Structures are given as structure tokens and as C-alpha cells.
Length: 17
Image (cartoon, rainbow, N blue to C red):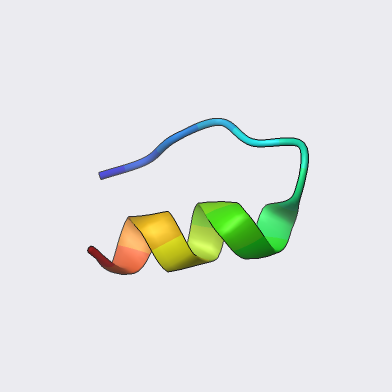
């Protein structure tokens, strides 16, 4: 799951889910 976010760190965390 990939969500566009201003912060790359948030994208990585969400991508792991």
C-alpha cells in the first residue's frame, strides 16, 4: 500500500503495512 505524503518516512511506514 502506497500513500503519497510530504514526508518520505511516513510513506515508508505506510508502505510496510
